[in-house]
Image 1 (cartoon, rainbow, N blue to C red):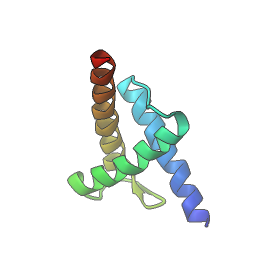
Image 2: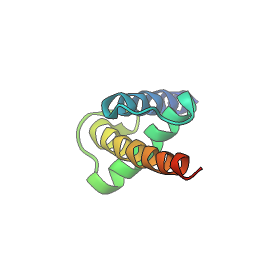
Image 3: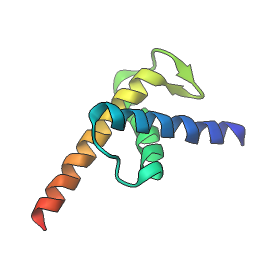
Length: 85
């Protein structure tokens, strides 16, 4: 149970940090941060591999890079949807 809580906390922090670095808000607030961090971690680990610091099943650098890419793509999609309406 405790590892699940750490998973959510670290995912949220990584998603928030990626949003700060890229300068765009994550849609969905804190839930969006958690999702971006967790999905970004999966993307980053799949593409970049497992290297760097490890915190609670997250490799920080690949997870952060994956979350940055994910937030950038989602923000582009959201912007194009706003322009279409």
